[in-house]
Length: 321
Image (tube, rainbow, N blue to C red; front, side):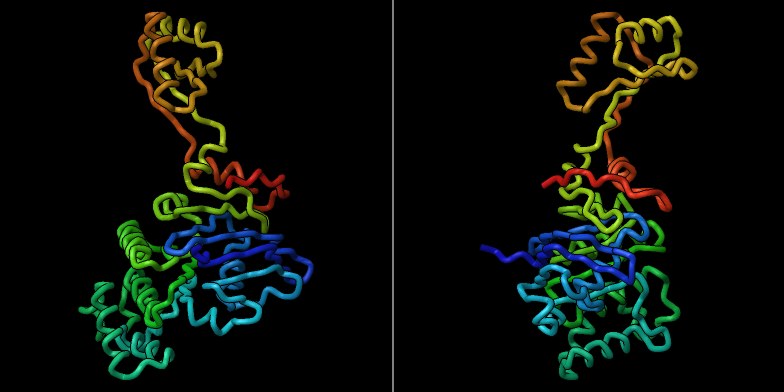
């Protein structure tokens, strides 16, 4: 039986009177991308800092195993198995990209020859060879993030924590970073990432946990999460008021917009449900000028399961397993 890369049971963390994490349970399989999704202040960064041994969970915080090691009793073994890239770059802008890499190799106690070999391989892999001799301060945001992750990989970690890795990057750089994350997983590396970008979680994650007010509001694949949120519908738009009124009369479950001449009919978007609706329209000789299908996406999941900043916490939703 394969040992999960990360298991967390009953994780709690407080800062003074403020409870930041309130009984978190997580299981992250090896060789997968697991995303923690949530608004600012939900506890994502705190969770990553604890799991990566940067912050102590404290007494009564539950059990945490990372890379098969108990974080409480084997912190050094955990550190040897992981790499961490935080929200803010660890790159030293006063030295070159290559020197940043070699410094990281020294910190990992690699021999001079191994350090130069690993540095050359990673600079090539992350398309940084041409910029290797330039000060890192001259790098673009995307280049700095690539260098940051390359530095994280010097120690060949099997588990990588990425805390909002694409914050502040332009769309092209974000897509480049996504490709890097996918390539890491193909080599067997496990990635736990935090993000506020819903499309990022949808694009990359094998499983997603929605964190809100220190609790897991829901967990599952992107498709599982979308299915627990209501709101799927078909939108029919008409240009002829008479046809619109006929459709509104026959589609009794529809929501009306008389000014825009549109109807919203609850519909899960499956082939059977769409065929039933189309057959109904044909039977009543109703022709819609435009038909669009809306199924819940992660935006809907996010808004349904998280509390707006400054609002009172809502009741936690049932977890999808």
